[in-house]
Structures are given as structure tokens and as C-alpha cells.
Amino acid sequence: MHLPTIISLVLVLFVLIPPGEACPLVCICKWKGGKQTVSCRNQGLDTLPDGIDPETQVLDISGNKLGVLPKHAFARAGLLNLQKIHVSNSRLTQIDAGAFSELINLVEVDLSDNYLPAVPSLAFKETPFVRDLNLGGNPIKRLKNGAFRFLPQLVKLDLSRCQVSDVEDQAFAHLAILETLKLNSNLLPILSNYTVKSLSQLHGVELHDNPWECDCRLRDLKLWIETKNIPHPISPTCHSPQRLSGRRFSELPVSEFACPPRIVWEGGGGGGVRQVGVVEGDNATFDCAFEAVPSPVVRWYLFGRPILNNTILSFSRKFIIFEENWKSSLVLTNTNLKDGGDFFCVVENSAGFVEANFSLEILPLPPYQNILDTSHIVVVVLAVVTILIMLAIGIGVFLWYRWRLAKQRAAQSYKGNGHGPPGGELLTPVKPPRISYDYEINSGSLVHQNGFKTHHAHHGKGGGGDSNTADNPDLILETNNTSNYQEHGGLGGEEESNNSELNWEQASLSYRNLGYATEYPTDYGLPIIHENSVYSDDTHSTAFYPLPPHPNGAIPHNVSLPLSNGCSSTVMSGVWNKNKVGARITAPNARDSPDEGYQEGYVGTDV
Image 1 (cartoon, rainbow, N blue to C red):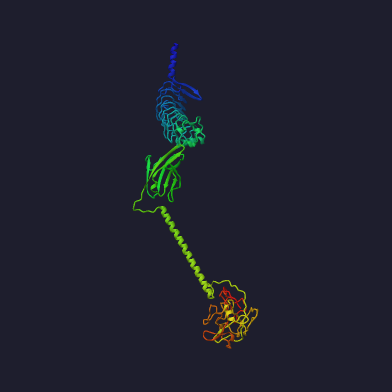
Image 2: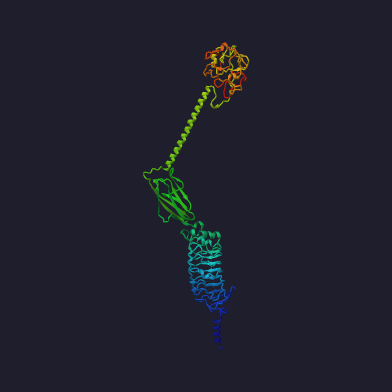
């Protein structure tokens, strides 16, 4: 057999070797990294080559013209043991659902630099253990919610160099253990807060080369990178706003990631001037609702001048500013016709400011309507209250003065009559010094048959006692309970009698004969003026007191005076003290002490 024939037979036998027993001519089969690897790179293949060993673990068919990976593409080739598949730069435009079905050991897939417009989610429905997926370099514009829901074990995800401009909030929701994410070199302006929160286990991220809009929407991303200390080899750079363009995240504080305020009109509608009309006297309210991150500062202006809270315009007119729930309200109380004008609400933060314009129109009151101004009402009320208070005070003072005047008059009246003040009001008893007088009394009976006892005192050394006695306010007659009438005291000269007494001749005469009860009288032994006796409060020196009849009926000749009824009686002469409030007379069976017999509250002098 010729040699060329033998070589041809060998080649035919090599091609006809059953799968698993040989390596396709367009591929390289070798052990690499402890795994059986088949590489068919850049062979211009439009389908999988036949004859690949089923025990192959790594298959690299990158750089071909595959276009589409049909359903069960690898299962039909018997490559169920594949762990890694590399199909990069193969002009793939479509990967059918189930293309990787039955590859339960698949852990790594490289689909980079193809023409895939979206993440082939359904292709991985039966490959739950994929840990590394590279989709970089595909024209993927949007990452939809649940794009990786069949890849819960994914640890590394490369989406760099795509055209991603929008990442939905739940796009990474199922990647609970994702550690590395590459989103660099895309068209991403923002990443929402929800997207960032779903990447709680991330240990490395690449975000550079994106047109980042460094406003409030990136605030959470900035905080997340700083607080979690996420490694990022290259710091992202701001593309906008203009004030932050070209500046890196690492050199900006969180406060710079702000959104300019936006006015939110109630009931919708755009900007422009808002008309506010109120009736004169009513309150005018301007509501300025807004949105801004971070919280802005709100200022109100009128005629170019700022309005401060609680600015007082007049007695009842002022500005009040309320701020709550992203709304600032300005209230002008008690408006008048001069308050019309344009009011401005300016909302400002680190990202910029926005303003809202309000035009106030004051409507006059109808001609027939006469409504008091609030200030007028307050003044009237205060005036009425003041008048009532003053009137009450005046009435109180007048009544008090009348009461005091009546009390003084009553006291003077009782004082003149010799009685105590009304209502039983008593004064502290005070005993004045004893004053003695000279008496000249002849012996004789002091008892007249009509029951009156009289005494006429003669003062001095020679008589003339009537006039002196009448003018002496301190002379008080005192009697003592003895059996015989005796005369005491000096009858002449400078000698004073401190204990002159007139004694009853009948020692057995009792109080009952005088009209008293047998017990100690309640008037402390002072005599009671008989209803038939005569008492005068003038300057006469003669006083009449009721007495029991004398047994002998004798009357001293020098003291006998006529009574009003024509009878004679003995007159006891005495003059009340100058206060005219009391006297002391010692009756039979009465006490002998000069300190006794004073009625409480009365002042007198005994002689």
C-alpha cells in the first residue's frame, strides 16, 4: 500500500471517530486548570461544531458568527457536563429561552461583546447555580425589574460598556449575595435609592465613565459608598449640574447632592401668578407647597422686602408664617384696602431656588354692611370692662364711707346716752385715778316715802357746792352696806377723802326691794334707773335714782330738793366723768372694793 493512501485513510478515520473519542478539527482540546477544555475561537462558525467530547467542562466558541443560540443548543450536543461557556464577540443577537437548559453544573457564562439588546433572563431558567455572568459590551439599554430572578447564586456581574441608561428599582432585587458589580462605561445618570438598597452585600463596584447627575437622586448612592466603604478603583465623576461638572464623588460633601426646589400647586397647573382675593377685614392666606432635597429655606417677600414671622403692622394686623409638611403658609390678618399687592415665596437650597408669585386683591365691604374692625371691638370691650371696674370700686368706696359714717354717728349717740356701743362691742375697762371732793352732809334720814334718795353735795371749804358739783365731771356717788348712815371724808382744808361713802341706815334692805333679782345682777351692781326717775345728760348736778322708802321718812334739811311730783327727796349729787360712759354706786349688799362694780367696757370715777 502506498504511503499517500495510508495517510488518507488515517484522516478519514479521524473524522469518522465518534463523539467523545476525538476533538473537532477546528477546535483545540486540552486540559487547562484541571478541566477538560475545548477552544474553537475565531473559526467563523455559525453553529456548534460536531464531535466535541461530552466530558468537556470548558467550551470557548468566542469570535465566531453564531448569531443565535437556539433552545437546548448544548443539551442536543451532549455537553451536559459544561461548567463554563464563553461565547463572547460572536455576533449574538438572540439567545432563546432554555438555550442553557439541563446544564445543571454551569457556573460561568461569558456573553460579552455581542448584540444582545436585553438580559436573556429566560435562557437561565434551568441554571440556578451560575455565579459569574458577563454581559459587558452589549447594547443593553435598560435593566428591567427581575432581570436576574433565575440567578440567585450570582456573585459577579459585569454590565460594563453597555448602553444602560435606566436601572429599574428591582432590577437587582434577587441578587442577594452579589459581591462585585461593574456598571462603568454606560449611560447611567442616576441610581435610585431602592436599587442601591438591594445591593447590601456588595464588596466592590465600578461606576466611573457614566454621565452622573449629581443631585438628590444620587444622594443615597453617595451615602452608601461612604458609609459602607465600598471599594471602587476609580471614583465616579459628576457630569451635571453645571456647578459640579467634572468633580469627583470623593471630593463632594453629601449636602452638594441636592435637587433644586420645585413649586407644587394645589389642584395641578403650572407656574404663573396666583390670584388671592379676600374681603376687607378677613385674613389673607398664601400657601406655597414645594419639593426639595435637602430641605430648603423659604422666604416671603413683599415689595422686595423680606417678611418676618409675627411682623406687626398695626394693633390687630400682622404677618404669621407657618411651615409644615413641605408647605409654607403666609397669613395676613385683618386686611384692609391698602394691603393689595404682589407677594413672593422663594424656596432655596444648595441646588438652586424657585419662586412663586401671589397677587392679593382686597374686596371692599358692601355699603350696607357695617362691621366693626377687630381693633375697635377690642377697644370697646376694654373700655366697658374698665368702666364697670371703676364703677364697682366707686360703689364700694361709697358704701364703706356710709357705713363708717353711720358707725361713728351711732358710737357718738350711744356715747352721749351713757350706754355701750351697739352689738355688745365693749372697750377694755380702764379705771381713772381717784378724785376726792369735800362734802358737807348733815345727819338725817335719806329715805323719802316716795322711794327716792337724793344728795346734794357741797364742795370746798365754805360751800357753794351746787355750781362746782354741776361742773365736775368726775364726781360719782358711792354708798356702802352699813347699818347707820355715816359721813366720811374731809369737810374742809386740803385733806382729801379717798373713800367717802354714804351708808344705808337699813342694813337689811336687799336687792329685791330695789327691783333686782336675788342673784348677783348681770349689770355688775350698777343701779338701774327707774322708769319714773328723771335723768338728764346736761350739766345739772342733780340726779334721781329709785330707792326703797326710809323707815323714819326723815330727809336731811340741807339736801332736800323738790321732785317733779311735788315731793321732797334726798338727792345724791354726782357728775358723770367726762366720757359720760359709766358710774359706780354701792348699794346694800354690794361689793365694797372700789375696783368692783365697773361694767366691762365702761370707764368711771368713784368718790
